[in-house]
Image (cartoon, rainbow, N blue to C red; front, top):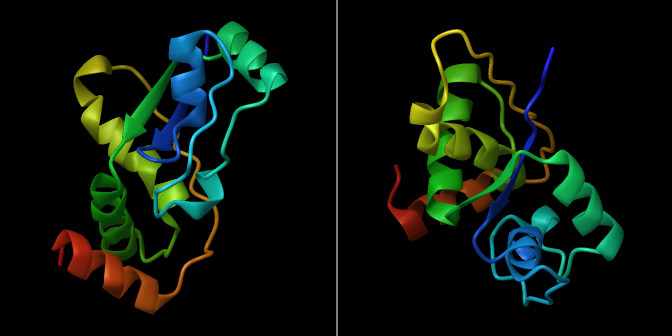
Length: 128
């Protein structure tokens, strides 16, 4: 079966999306709370792979990632970091792109986050 793979980044950790848009590697200064996404650049090999294999790249805000993180924690009873919860934020944003029979798979990994981190982000974005 055909599978469409979409990469997801957060604003301020979107070196891949910016590089693909520019058609060449772009260096950024990461500002996102999604620290594990915060590479200052995407290597040329990654850009080539993304060009040939990805259906698209979604970029969501830190706020949307925190809202999704909260939803995952409350509903699934799992704590993930923003680098993972951003996948749910992207799927929610792109909801109208999915058909009735489509299956959507989100990779939720990484627990590199503390409860105090989550509390700080909720204060910052007033999601609680």
